[in-house]
Length: 195
Length: 195
DNA sequence: GCTTACCTACCTATTGGAAGGTAGATATAG
DNA sequence: CTATATCTACCTTCCAATAGGTAGGTAAGC
Image (cartoon, rainbow over all chains, first blue to last red; front, side):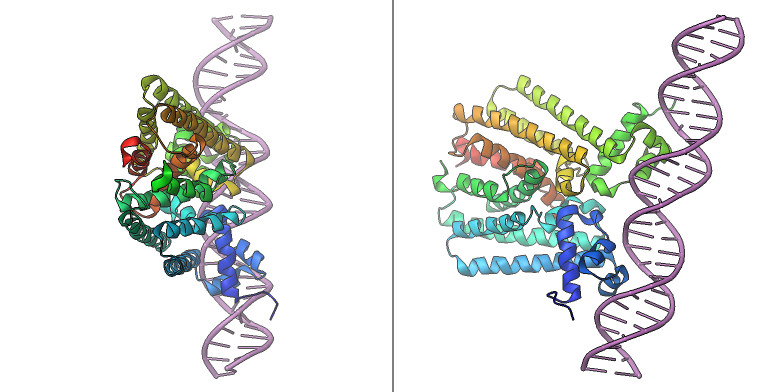
């Protein structure tokens, strides 16, 4: 065994994930992955039958990890605004790693060209996020920390959209502004002391 | 002559634009374009030397059209909020056409994998939008229609990000919520009567 | 002795792109 | 008015590279 950490299958997923975050589904090949991992292309097929298989599995892992992070936030913070700030940090951390996009943000853009199983995984991710955010905003409104007349569902959609969009605008516009700034600005606007 | 409208070069750009909006830069080929237009692949090369050429030209046209729309808004509306609402409608109209993404939103996501000339065009688009929005928000704040403590530049980044993101989240999440709803919700939150 | 992890070799389709040719319109010069 | 030249828009043919994926084999471990 070599000194590289993790099983080969894990490393394949790690590499594929990074490639998707930077180039998208159609922007990388099994050969790219193989080269980066240090094996041959057919060996990648040994671990993941098809490309759709690999990416669908990867998207599921991504969503599960996100789910864990959300659960961790719930236990670590009680204050609804602190929870939302921690949520923004999740996206900011991803983006800080050499401008990596959210996996499902990237895949969501390409949704029309994706295999069904992959597109399903992407939809699950957004559903999970929207549900968690809706609950968080409902808490924030009930505790009086957010005082907009807008429904919690709409606010959830707004924050998620702003964060996903900030990555794309920040990267495409070569701006220094990313999801951290955009997300926090929005939270300030929505919070009581925002004006 | 056939009944198809526009010159061949224009039709090539129209088709390529639609394909990019639905599948991204790596998601379409010269052959796809040729087939849709009704000519052979090398004839596409006759009009646009390379793929980078085609897409860069197309991005420039997209930005110019957007620029015209912004100018039209400026002359048609005086009220800063009405201008911002008209801006939101620009994105909503694009998205309403079978869920088409903003060309530069899509390309922005793939920015890391794009030829330099294309990436430059994308950056120009975002710069144009951010500049216009910053001025619009400055007006809105000076007239007291928007009362956040946030700077106009930050608000511009926020609205643009929210609109670009809403397209991706809406499509990827198979939601009925799109840029129209998200954009208008944000404007309500920012406006005086938003609470 | 079966399973796992990997390999070489190969296949077919498609990619972006080049080379070179043709039909028809237009322009120009004698 | 005609002959020559040029241009545009398209064509067929071709190419090397790359795509996703398969077949079949080897070597090690439980």
